[in-house]
Amino acid sequence: MTQTYRTLRLTRASKGVLDVVIDAPPMNLIGPELVHDLASLFGELATTQDIRAVVLESADPEYFVPHVDLTKVADYTAEAAKAGGPGDASLGMLWHRLSELPVVTIAKIRGRARGAGSELALACDMRFAALENAVLGQIEVGTGAPPGAGGVQHLARLLGRGRAMEVILGSEDFDASTAERYGWINRALPDAELDAFVDRLARRIAAFPAEGVRTAKRVLNELTLPPADAVRADAIRFRDLVASEATQARVKTLFAQGLQTRGPLELNLGDRLGDL
Image 1 (tube, rainbow, N blue to C red):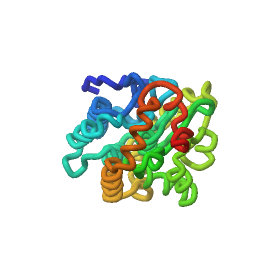
Image 2 (cartoon, rainbow, N blue to C red; image 1 turned 90 degrees about the vertical axis):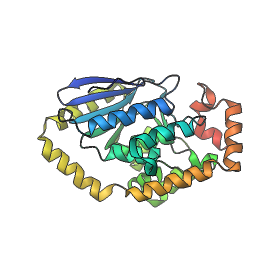
Image 3 (cartoon, rainbow, N blue to C red; image 1 turned 120 degrees about the horizontal axis):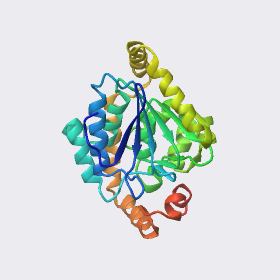
């Protein structure tokens, strides 16, 4: 890899496997710097021949990626546009690009993965989470807007209609055990076992003939990935409603209570949304 990244730490874990650690203090919010770095990384991975599998994780044990930085929506959207062009100026299309990469991508989740952070994990090929501390949530409807970066599309396909309705319309937090049972993640593993399990799986896949892995992934994507136009439509709906008076009023209340700062609100955001 040739790029320099401000919010990502890259390590060659073993032959053919790249570990990518999100490290964007104070709490891994999705802002312009992180979007810029992820877009650059995806560009490199689209053409690499020596990376077969990528493991995405967080440097912060409390937050995988909690959600977007709501003070910088225009800025991170502009960075997404640079990666995909004006017609694809959305996180949803950037995450869709991640899903279509020829490498195999695995999200290793500790801490909170909510909103677009959950959607980032959903865009990966597989998701494994720490049983004791992983928390997943699609919180958007609780603020007044639908998920806009692929969450509706992926969760409907993975969970089925009823459970996707529960997750998206309820906007609650889900522990790793329930997320596993619902199909949101592949497995919930004890924290002490998570690293070794994911490392072994990534190395195993990376050791197989590359064209066989890539072809199998491509066929599975054709069967299961949402079409790009559906992702674009979700992004438009999100942008329209996130700017509405109702959403802005709820977000203002959340900021007054400590949104986007480390503390009780962010740790328990799913519960607090129901109290607004």
